[in-house]
Image (cartoon, rainbow, N blue to C red; front, top):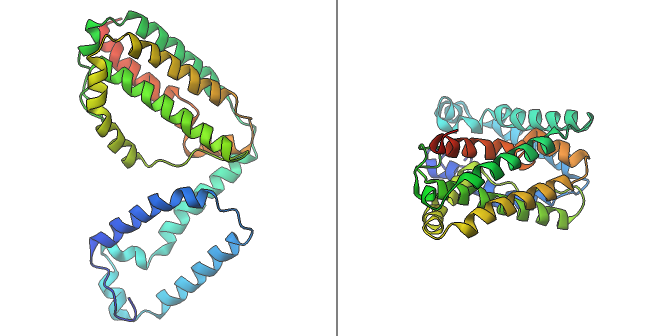
Length: 250
């Protein structure tokens, strides 16, 4: 930009950077080179020197616009540094594995709810949620899919080596997957429902068993600090089960 070959006015640049972040996360998860801290400090120093050299006219065109982040790097850095400090702090404390009890409680409630659902109930609509307007069958299929999906992510992380976490999945991408599954879940609900009801319970048992087998060590503490729903499945389960209970009645 300082050489006059690029303008920061195009919003597509920011969108492209978000896409690059999502694409690179799996690769960054595998980086463990000892010189990474030094590279981070060197990159910050080089960038700050470039910003300091920017002429007033360039600064004025950026200040107060969506591209002001090119000047105010402290916002981006502090956000991530605060996160790192929270994780480091969590590593020094004993891991609270109360999420195992909450998972068990949500699994028990799921068994109770599924035991009341009939084939006719599968087509009954629930109240609209953030993901959309679903039937009971779609909601149960949603729970089964994400339990299976998370189990595969945890299995892949453990196969990579001790201490590895599941690959990060942005909420925006999760919403897109949910949208793509809507027709599939509807078709599942149109069947007899016997297989679906069984899978809902089996999927929960599978992911909870895998989570229970994880050692109560530093990586688990980091996950609890960063994305607790990867371990505490009740965060996701209870809301959807509550939607179903509202339809069925206590």
